[in-house]
Image 1 (spheres, rainbow, N blue to C red):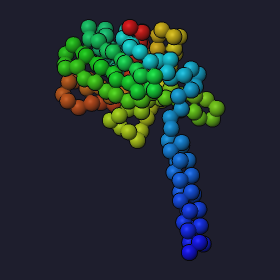
Image 2 (image 1 turned 90 degrees about the vertical axis):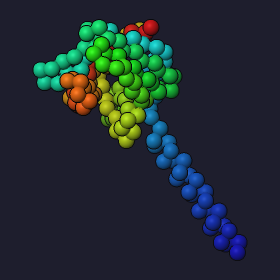
Image 3 (image 1 turned 30 degrees about the vertical axis):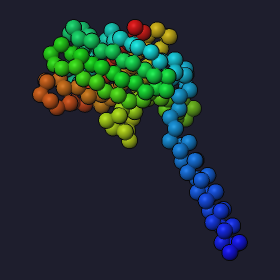
Length: 159
């Protein structure tokens, strides 16, 4: 009986250790070129451009607004308010994707929890610019209810 309890105890410890390791592996990296927590606060877009092929829409240039609220954890809410349709909100989490010694600015969108996109970025403490390649965003260019894959270019300033 003692041997059975011993093996059961060892098994539970092993299970506990393996579970805690897998939890750590799923943790998103928050420290890269700068800590993600530096982005906490409210941001207002001066540019919110969506492009595909020769079609391009800039919500700000067209008279709309885009705001973003970021928590110290990297969780964010992005509210887009184009002039030609109802405002809508998207949420997600900002983090750093580390790959081969480099850090890439990354966003895990809540509507696609098992996927994330990486973006080019610049940040100087008051201005954040995010540039994505093909398929880095979605926009309904013809306002028919169907989102189309596109590239994005946002410039935010602290508000």
